[in-house]
Image (cartoon, rainbow, N blue to C red; front, side, top):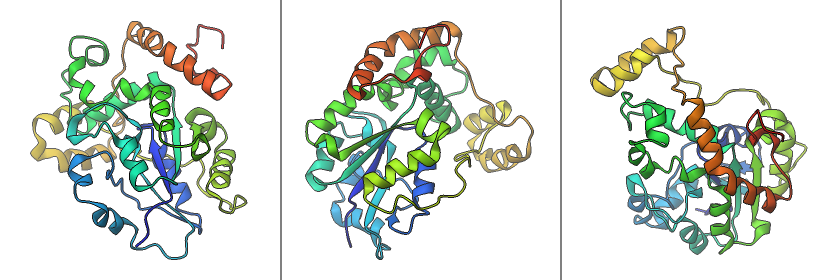
Length: 284
């Protein structure tokens, strides 16, 4: 069984599931649907390459073989659920010639989305406010999940470039290459992977991970998990079941200030700015 020759390494909550579903349509690309978490989870990495290879046993004649695990982009930090800080080095040991795809999203929006994901997946009690867990007294609850740290893209890119050549890395921008111009984003990606870039993808505007939860359901699923299957089924048919918490404008402003140095470093690395990452009341 082959090993992959490309990886979608992140970022979490930045459209990687959409990218996976699109690339799975291409006859020259193989991607398992599930996130493998081989290089980032200690308990999986210790199982060895023989365990990893099983995810690619259905490869036939595809020339681009990959997998998507958006936690791979979080480098140099121990994290919850056995996250390995040396993920980039472990990838290079086994796949030194692999191509890497990183999708970046406005880090403020990404962090907010990540906290809502922790609420929905019962990793975090819904009793906490978004302000408290992002930058307040309860921020230690989300730090092990990299909520803030994931958005320091330039730092993680530099970690990868310590072991990989720049030509092996493709950076896509969620707001531009997925939301605004998905066809062009996919063309760029297929060219990078060396497969037919004229392939016509379908469902370019389809949402991924659309399942939501109501405010009541959020509390019931956390405090009465035995009811989760029932609550999930009811929420599916409830109007207004896409409840999401939102931080205050003060916290949003503080997040933009926190990420400003990292964003500027990324813009310099890319050789251009990303206008949609600028607060609305500032010139872009």
